Length: 379
Image (cartoon, rainbow, N blue to C red; front, side):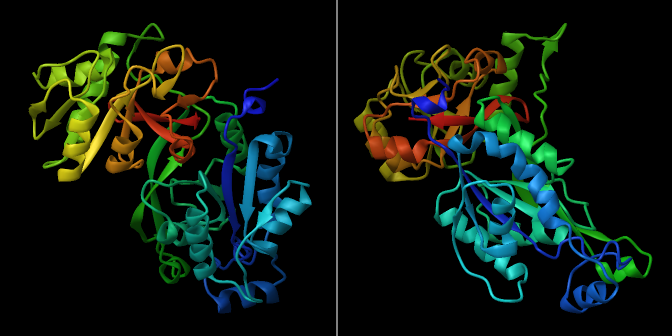
């Protein structure tokens, strides 16, 4: 029996395809943006390969269908590709006879309202830009490369690789999470022989099937150095005026030590602007602090078990977690500890079933300095 058959939350994916992506390439039009270009591409006999390329990715998910829930846009914007590989799916939204980038943006916004864990899109740089316009900052997205212009860093190296990345997430294998640039080319300049790109924004992307250990000796992590790097990353990103609740554990203790602050190893300490404001705080004290202003929770993973909440840190009651916000949780852990879970997901047991469900999905885990992975969370 697989882990997923034991009740682990299914990975919820929102799928959207740009049905005209890449159509201008074979027609030597240097891109596919704009109705006039698409009409000229059709006149020259060029057809889009988006469905075929997306199918290469989706085909890798067919064997995992019990563990994956697919939401997709209608027709050529998603449903047709799912039907082509016999992948169960649920159609949401609506489209007209002619589709534009605004349809992609609307699809992404709808997926976010539906609570998807990952937005999977097929297209090129223009599509990535449309996805960015509809996506929340902390949402995760991954591109299936199908366009003419491929300057953005948000795409898998090929459609099959995109499917493999998703399969790795479903199987509980840590996948590197990075902020990747969305860039786009000025097509008018490109057709004039000048390549001009501009930075448009960044998306949170599960990167290719690699799991790098940045701090190692003879291929193995050195725990003392790793926790120092984790602490350095967290400290560098502390926001002024924000209160941080530092949970129990040796990894979180390293953060306090690096800041030269006293630490309650088996308790929760509250810090703000480099100062300890409450030591060994109770749940009620945390709730009062959360009511006063912006807060964050910093926790680590229970080794061997994988729990984030509900084991040794009950000070983080459901009321405290809700007051802080489920999107204001920072998880830190060494890769050695995550590997020790043998592919099992992270767990939560707050005592509030609805909250446990909200905490499910993908969680970014800081594993070093400017190094993080994505892990599944199950209740």
